[in-house]
Image (tube, rainbow, N blue to C red):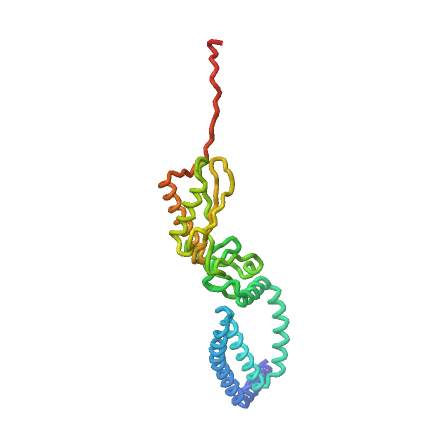
Amino acid sequence: MKEKFENALGKMWDKLDGWFNAFVVSLPNIILAILVFAIAALISKYIKKIAYRLASRTNLQESMKQLISQIVAILVIIVGLFFVLGILNLGKALNTILAGAGVAGLAVGLALQGALANTYSGIILSYVKQIKFGDWIETNSYEGEVVDIDLRVVTIKQVDNNMVYIPNKLVVENPIKNFSTTAQSRVILECGVGYDSDLEKVRNLVTSTIAKNFEAVENKTDVLFLYREFGDSSINFETRFWINSTSALEVAKAKTEAMIKIKSVFDENNIDIPFPIRTLNIPKPIDIANK
């Protein structure tokens, strides 16, 4: 038993000695490989900055600029790894790694279909011009300002200052209403007046009031005034005019201001804005006692 142990111990030392000799022989290659990898890492940082500067000269979204610079940096690192494996004479290991990476990539791709779909959609959103930082949009029943677009979600800041994170896939696959694509927004205001009102006078008062209080409206002919219907209690009309803003919040503020001004001028001219009224016709009571 002792002889077997000593024999096994001797073989182990021989093997360790062989490994040590191989390490000493390969030490220059190892040092060179470490040096090459360090140089590749430093170069990748500079290349990333240069790629970002070049991308900044284009009209790409910020997320796309960062993505391009990151991909370029990763490619430089990969090239450095190929050089390192060649210096260490690990060609066979390289083939094995590539084969394993292919199988692993397939498995990961199947497992991360949703995440990859969001990543692909994020790249698409980085290219399209219909949505960008600072735009006021409405999509997937959410409305707000676009504050970030990355490879996973689109971040929207709502009127109440809450953040909504919508997966890129949903934004790409669903309609987007962008309030910021034009320099102006239209305000639509609905109201009604009593049946005893002078309709021509109502129209003149509303259009002149809007023209006086909003800079984008040069004169009252720029205000679109339409009577819509004979309602149950009022004659309903609709007023449309433009403001110099693309924010839905500014549209709401303009609509509020218009309502205040119109109500004030109606009060001054004794024009009624009626609320729903129901009239009850009660027949003459029957005198049962006399009958």
